[in-house]
Amino acid sequence: MEKIRNNAKFLKKILEKKGISIFAITKLVLGDPRIAKTIVDADIEYIGDSRINNIIKMREAGIKAKFILIRNPAVSEIKQVIKFTDMSLNSELKVIRMLSEEAKRQNKQHCIILMLEMGDLREGIMPDKLDSIFKETLKLEGVELLGIGTNLKCFAGVIPDDTNMMEFSNIAENIQNQFGIKLKFISGGNSANYNWVMSSKNIGIINNLRLGTAILMGLESIKDSPIAELEQDIFTLVGEIIQLDKKPKTPKGKFKTNAFGEPSIFKNKKIRGKGFRTQALLNIGRQDILETGLVPIADIQILGASSDYLIIDVKNNKFKVGDKIKFNMSYESVLRAMTSPFIEKRYVNE
Ligand SMILES: *Cc1c(COP(=O)(O)O)cnc(C)c1O
Image (cartoon, rainbow, N blue to C red):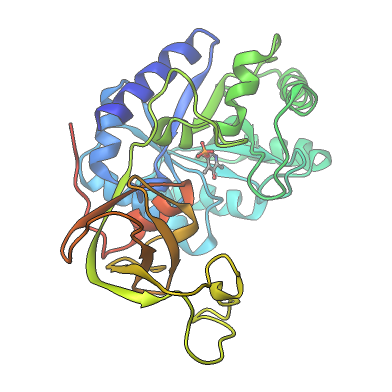
């Protein structure tokens, strides 16, 4: 928890110098209220999450922040979005109209950030439609247009660079001039924008980033490389050995695919062999993690996972049944572990 707080503090300080505000994104941790509190304690004002239920959970836990729904609202959740969030990222005019209607009904003012498609082909208005949607959103009651944003490196994998970021910044500047207004948020992207923001000589009028990975894992998200000033290995997964035995290095009988229809790992000749290996089963599986995203701290080898077991070669370690085995985790493994009801969450150095 201390590492998360330090990361949030550092990012706030260094980005403030560049005129950039932060929306801290908590979707990786299922909107965990204790983690959200830690981030708010680092003086971050805005919390964003992709799931309305996570936002409701944090609000009900008394987290004092402004909440932003960062996934485009679904028609079926409009009521909750108006009731429980302060702002949402949007790219469907139809939905924005419904947000306006519902905000009037609930006697609320809901803030809107219009998302712009800049090449990654996920959420976002095509640039040629921005003018008309911008114009209509400005006119709607119950909603306030507070900014425009874009998101790269999530679907197609497009990398933020001077070209696409300046193009985005110019579009933002033009639309501000055209309508004679100044937007509060020109939200340039996510943790994949970190290196660009820190190294670019000109970040245009971009004044906001939405950061999850950087705060919670200390990584920029182009290559998942560590940000030098930040702390990494914040999440540790602990599994327990529930079976430990010497087993043959080669399966008996014909083998083809595993429980998930993937080729058996024993098709790999390096895994197969003569003799025996000491093999352990741990009480975690694909329902809880992605085994390819686990990095064991001890010198062991992960052989694979089914829904409920993780199968490891313990190599030369002297383990026994009941021993706890620790792993560092990739983004995707943390996402699943935090989502799994079977993984007990323990908070250290809160
Ligand atoms: C997940 C997400 C983010 C945060 O991404 P990180 O790379 O984890 O910082 C920002 N914006 C949107 C729209 C997202 O969906």
